[in-house]
Amino acid sequence: PQMRDSLWYSDGTKLNLYYRNAEGKMSTTSVYEVMDAFSEVLIGYDIAPHETFDSQYRAFRMAVEFAKHRPWEIVNDNQGGHSKLAAQGFFKRICTLHKPTMPYNGPSKTIESAFGRFQQQVLHKIWYFTGQNVTAKKLNSKPNIEFIEQNAYALPTLEEVKEIYRQCREEWNNMPHPATGISRMEMYL
Image (cartoon, rainbow, N blue to C red; front, side, top):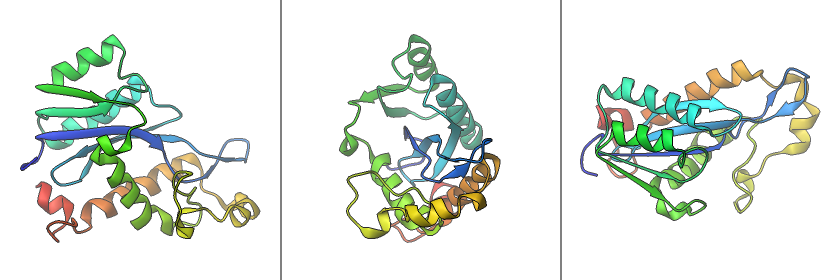
C-alpha cells in the first residue's frame, strides 16, 4: 500500500495485560484490532472476552468513523466470526476487496509483526504484561508471573485496563514509523 486506507488488516488476539476481575482474581481478555497497512496506525479496536462478529463490527465501525471513509481492501483471517454470512456481507459492503487469509498463518498478515513490535516496544514496559506468545524466546517477552501473582491485589480493573490500553495505542500511533522516521499518525494524516 502506498497511501492510507488502501489496505486495512484486522485480527483478534489476547490483550496481553492482566487485570483483576470482579472476584478479585487475575484475568486476561481479548482485543480485536484494525490497522492501516500503509502507516501501521491502529485505527479501530474492541475489547471483549472473545473474537466475535460483534467485536469485529465495533472495531471496524470505530475505524471507519476515525478514517471518515471506507478502505479499498481488507485482509483478515477466517476465524472468530469472519466466516459467518453476516460478516461476509458486512465486509463486502465496507470495502471493494475482502481477502481472508489462512488462520494461524502469521506471516500472511503484516498486522502480526506489528502486534509483536507493539508488545515489545509499548506493552512490555507495564509490570502486569502477560508476555508475548509461547514461542517468543527473549527474556523480556515473558512475564514475571511470581511478581504479578504476589501483587495481584494491585492489578487494575477491566475498565482501568481498557483506558491503559487506549493510552498504549496512542503511544504506538505517535511513535516513529520504522521505514520513514516520522510518527505513524503524522504519516497516516
